[in-house]
Amino acid sequence: GNTEVSPSTVGSNSDEVAAVLRTQATPHQCYNLCSISSSSPQCLGFLPGIDAPNSTALCLPVSSCLALCAATPGCSGVDAHETLPRCFVNTAGSCPEGGLLAHADYDFHAPVMPQRRLCGRRLQTVQDPGYSCDA
Image 1: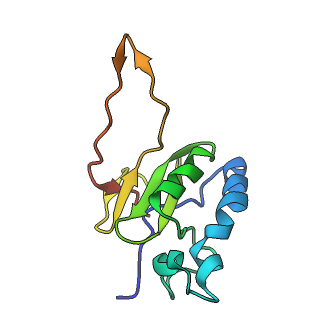
Image 2: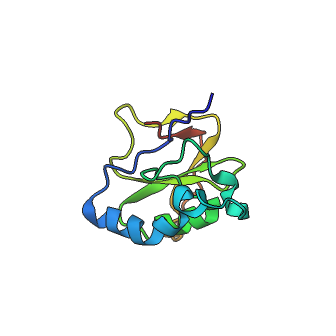
């Protein structure tokens, strides 16, 4: 059908986080960017009839979403569409009770942290098990 359950809900963000997302993410919000004209390649992630003015979907590639996540206090990761420039920034408390759920079209990406050494060993990269927040 013509419905999509957002893999994340950013609505529970603190005022500080909401302010960062409002100023840095709004220009990339799928609805703001693509509802009038969808000729930009970024607008391939826009879902007409699903993305509304209050949608938190961003029409960005995963690398840009992760950069936005890194600039957002409390960001816990990004849900990014597997094939489209479309993502959601997650923050602490944005997942429903029960935690992460599988979503066929989205992958969860943890925020990129600087490499640190502990006891002379490098931390290993965590493998994505294929689960995403599902509101």
